[in-house]
Structure formats: C-alpha cells, structure tokens
Image (cartoon, rainbow, N blue to C red; front, side, top):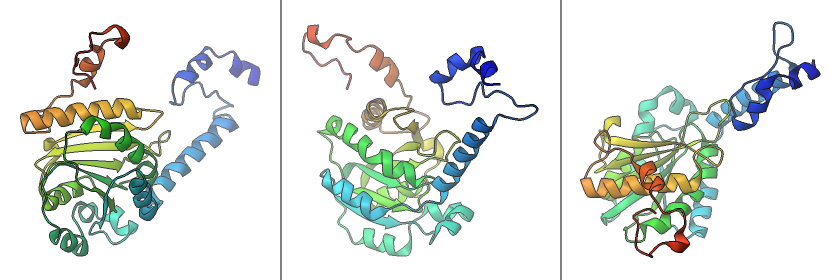
Length: 265
C-alpha cells in the first residue's frame, strides 16, 4: 500500500497546500495515518474554541513591547454563555462599561482591540507580532491603548471605540477554527465606531498567521486600509482593498531607486 501511495502523482502537490489531498485509500476508508491526522486536527479546532485567553500574559507581553493596555469583558459571563448567546459577546459588561465611562475621552486616531473570539490561540499567538509589524507604519498616528477583550465578538470593538472616542477601531480577533488553521486571526476595521454598526460598515482581513497571510503582508494591507479610511472618512463596502496593486507597483530594487517615497509601505 505504501508503494502505491508513493507513486500517486498527487503526492508531489501536497507540499504546496495544507488542504487534505492525496490521502490514499484503504478499502472503503482512509489509511490510518491521515485518519489520525484528521482526528487530531478536529480536536485542535475544538480546543481552540474552548481554550481560555490568558489575558494577564497578553497584557504583560504588550507592555513589554511598549504598548499601554486596558482590560474589558463582554456581557457573556463565561464561555458557555458566549457560545450560546452571541449577542452577549457584542456588548460590554456593566463593569467594563462603567470603567470606560470614567476614563477621559482623549481622541485617538486608532484603537486596537484584541479579542479572544472563537480562538484564543490566535489572539495569543498572532496579535502582538502583527501590532509590532504595523506600528512603525503608523508613526504619525495617535494610538490609543490596546484593549484586551475577553468573551468578545467583532461588534464589541464598536462600543469600545465609541467609549474611548476613537476615530477608527481595529478588532484583532480569533477566527472560527478550521481543520488546518486553529490559530487564524481576523482583522476588522471600523471608521467612526459606535454601537449598532453593521458588518457592511467594516473591512475585514482574514487568515493572519505565518502559514496564511503573514505579518508583513497583513500589516501592509491594514496600513493601506487605515490610510484610505482616514482619507475617505469611511470603511466597509465603500472602501476597496487595492493594496495588492500598490505592493506590485513598488520598486523591486530599492538600491537603485531615486530615494523618493513610492507610496508603498
């Protein structure tokens, strides 16, 4: 059986993708190795959904890199309520709302929120490297504190941004795990955030992780969308992501450029 699998021409393509191709066959079923790999991936996806976010460790990591932080919690008191009541994850708890209400509203150009979402693994692993990659591109922006939000859904960022007086809120949140990506981070960008914003008012960048959209590429897209959002005064369906065209037009040999700003980050 192993010789037959080795001769399968699909095997040569497996190194190019994490998709499950060329798995082989044992009678009417899968061979043992790919079946066990599938079961492991399924277990990892389930763990990602239920694993709690270590907020203290994330705060410590952010502060070690020079970010100021805040801590909030959604109205979902625990993971069971979070999964059964998505609406609770979209609004702040009374305690968090009261804490934000007492803070001075210093208008920030952008506030970043890190939410556990459906994968605390993603928030823990991908958010800080992404922030490190994009921060140098935002040297002329007024950055608010990084908010760590537990039991968070995407729309929670709108209420947080509204309370903090942010012009733009960026939610970095764990995406629904796939069977090959239990730690994928999503980015949601909202101009003029406020309670009640719809998905049509947001832009999304998906699959941020080293095996997907890596940190430099994600930071490039995020910076482009932030610049365009500030220029146009909107996000969502009216803001198109043309960042790939900008990247393709950048000089391929910086050493021989004239030194002028090409516009590419």
